[in-house]
Length: 236
Image (cartoon, rainbow, N blue to C red; front, side, top):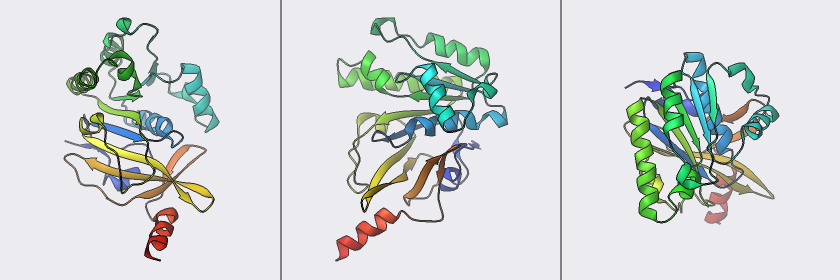
């Protein structure tokens, strides 16, 4: 299977070429670590390769997504022929159906799908952990059958990369990427760590990244200062 570029500067170097086509990747971490913009960049990243993208949002409205992108200098209007958004109506969980996004994927020949976030399945299948797991699994199977490359986001309390609390959904995806913030003196540093990418090799170090105009950039030529500082403090 071929690797597809992620559209996130520096990430393809960590992944040694990109993510496997038709695979599923979960991006997880605490609030404010850039998960939504990370996923948005992935959806837009395939457009130059004629890979239309779909962004499914259970967290924000279309207008909010556009404003967030504009704040980073990303104008979504220029992608309107290749980039699509779907915001499900969650006022009544029994009305939720994947039929609409699935039909859109088929009609527009979507190649990349983003789900922001798995909270959607907590809302629909919140009665038990088993129902939630089954709902996520069925969604992944549907995306696999449709031949798309999927990236989803989820929330996780994560302050220490040495003590990662794994959740049910972490084991369902073929890829797992952690975004977090680590204390550096009186401030925090954003850090990315690729935990797994089933079926492909990747770097195992943690790397710093920034969120500026244009979105996220990962710096693969340097280690996080925050982690080096923590290591020195542990030694002494």
